[in-house]
Length: 156
Image 1: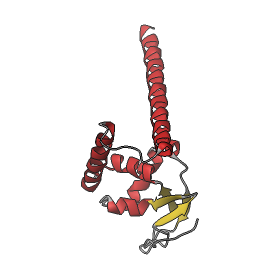
Image 2: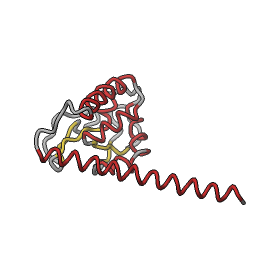
Image 3: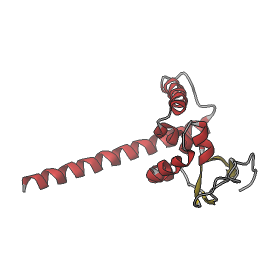
Image 4: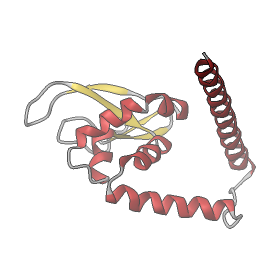
């Protein structure tokens, strides 16, 4: 917890550095994505917590309600990949614009128009792809097991 960049009206830092990674405050991201009620992003984060923790640690802090009062809550700090994930789930017009840009960059990468800057970066990309493939395989196995169980129950 070092390097506070700016401070959100709640008194929490907008951006922090933790473990060599820059992280953004959930409310700051929600405001940039055009949430009408920025605190609603926390419901989205909690709903997808397992997926977000699969991307990386999910630091959180006790959050005061801010200048308008209310109950204390939990503020989350998202790394870049987690912020992109929440952007994809947000469903706001601003989030859709950002997501379209990210999709275009990834498409260009998949087409071979963007290359890793060095072998270490390529190894990281390969590791991420392998992790995605494992998660997809697990999903398929889980779905098959669920379908098998449902077929069994229907026969009874």
